[in-house]
Figure (cartoon, rainbow, N blue to C red):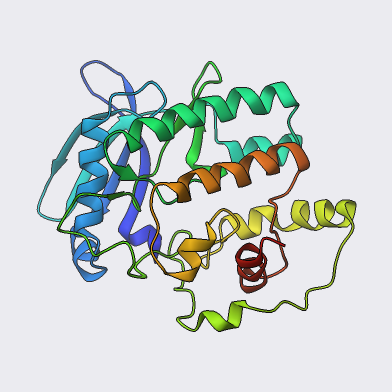
Length: 255
């Protein structure tokens, strides 16, 4: 269960009364899941990258059972919630949020990290409505010998996601019925929240080279951003389908 491994809570510092978001990671689960290097990468990235468009890490510490990351609290919600409320954004609104996300992605790429999990619920909004990129639990440094090669299929979509099948030939054909744009929008609106919080996760924002497990680089983050921009303007992701496997097929063939 992902919640056992990773919890984010609102907390207040006793002396200053300042409010923070506290990410609490269970050490035994980190070891069991083989997530130690990923957690180190997340902490190191947050400590290294100084950007107005990345959620800020203030402190990190540990006890015998947990690792704690104390980060800034962003009370404006996230892009997923905003899109559920508005369905689509105006072109000017989309330009604003995409521009700030570009700056966020650029800042981590300059430090040779790939985020690998760019999606609307990881784009948080501060009190004044500016966007900040969060959740670096799947980030990976490009120049680290501690990580497996990026050709290896260690990446899976979504929190607690099940791995995609090794036999990628299953992704080569799709018999999913075609929908009109309005039918697609209606179906996405109905299922968006359920898909977003599913333990299987959603592959809607994952680049085809990641799904094919043939090696990938920083470009996969830009693909994800393009999918989000499409959703902002149209109302649903470009390759959305009723089930994750059909979505993967569509992404592979850019249907």
